[in-house]
Image 1 (tube, rainbow, N blue to C red):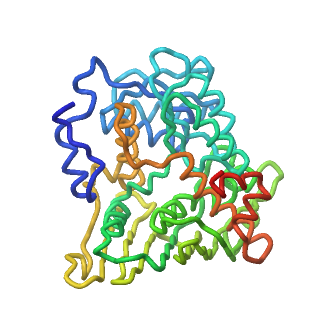
Image 2: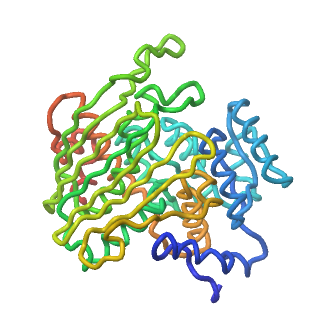
Amino acid sequence: MTNFRSPLRGSAAERTAALTPGNPYLSRQRKPRLLIVGAGMMGREHLRVCQLLGWADAQGIFDPFEGSLEWARSDWQSLTAAPLTVYTDLNEACVDGAVDAIVISTPNHTHLEVLRTVSQSGKPILLEKPMATTLEDAMDIVNLARDYPSVIQLGMQYRFKAQYVDALEAVAAKDTLGPVKTIAMAEYRPPFLDKVNQWNKFNCNSGGTLVEKCCHYFDLINLVAQSRPKRVYASGGRAVNFLDFEWQGKKSDIDDHAMVIIDYDNGVRASFTLNMFCQELYEELVVVGARGRLVASEQASFHPDTPSKAELLVEVPEHPAYRGVPVGYPDWIEASGHYGATFFEHIAFNLQLAGQAVDAATPEQALWSLIVASAAQHSMRIGREVDVGDFCEENGIGGFYEGR
């Protein structure tokens, strides 16, 4: 362990360079073994990243849907000849002595129920975003985590995307931008993909578009703002996607665009724009401080064999990125999923398994992102701004908002 250099410090380039020495388990008898609960798109990505990183072994998978299991087995066989246990009972899977840690990647509305079952094991858990679909369920998860004997890491993997890693580094350097004044984020992308039973086309299952898709971005905005959100206003709705879509006689009610404004206690003002009826993917974070402007952007695609292009621009005199510089991870990492973010998320989880502190999302931080997302969803419904403190009180988590 003494020669191990953490790959979760510094810029994206520095984190990539730090991968070469090995992993934190070299002095142990064996690597930890993971159980993946939920074998859908994200579950299969976790399997892929686990195999690619090589710091942990995939012990097995659990999913009640045979179609998902078939896809996962097929993906796994294309990666390795190593065995993969397919569990038929979640309780038995969690308490299996061969399982050391558990990744939960089931549909949003099942997170709390699955977590309650999994937590009986006392084993470390990586819980996918969003942590829950309601603030009440999310508060239950935070309370569970406070007394839990092992780590519960939340899957806010966008913290680990290359352009945001470098952006957060620059913002943290106080002599770069100076005090942050405004934040603007935007995502333009194609519609939601198909999921098992089309669960992501309905607010009751997903929590709403701003919860399901955008909690990542509100987490990043909260990290940059470094303050408590006090007012949220959002305007949005359904313009193009799934207007006539039905599943088992139920009509889709998912939103496809929104504009959100957030005021923070410290005077920082933020905005977020979402549009989900575009042909390609584009993300942008703009942070303006007293000394200049930062822009972290990415052009990407759902089309195969189309690499992403990310850039960091820091308009501060004499900054090396004043005219913009490309950022990113090597292609072999970016191809693993979410442009390398899930790869470094697994590194963070593995470091926590080895007893090292990392800056991965905690349940409390995930709840703050959900508070902003839920307040924005509510604002769209009622057509006016939302006082976040009152909103939290109405949803039974006023004590959390006030820090009690």
